[in-house]
Image (cartoon, rainbow, N blue to C red; front, side):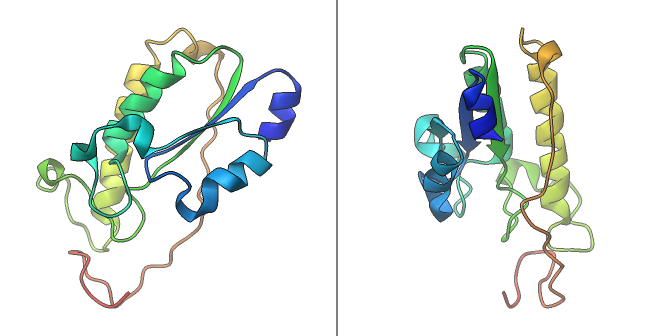
Length: 156
């Protein structure tokens, strides 16, 4: 899709709170037509790093809204979240806010839900919001491993 939009004059962007080229995504997205890959290095605040993957979704989504507002229109932008990936780490200040649930991932899903809510609250204030189509998709399905506990411990 990025290549199709690029051919039609759209700027193409990929936002990912993990490190530059984590999982080879920068190289892959460039092959698909993405011109601008924005990672945790662009965010520039290591205090929001979750200790495993990168910048927590709530902080990185807020950064993304700010950056998208600076992009020339039209644009095609992808945002890849990290909090719902093992080991499902969310910022300490939110661990008592969201229930642990029955699975290792449950708390991080609640955190992501709230991060998305805040993203949309900010995005609605932007000039580009009313002319934007939002598409959500999963990068993969992770069948819960019965050896993992809600605290993230267990065999992985």
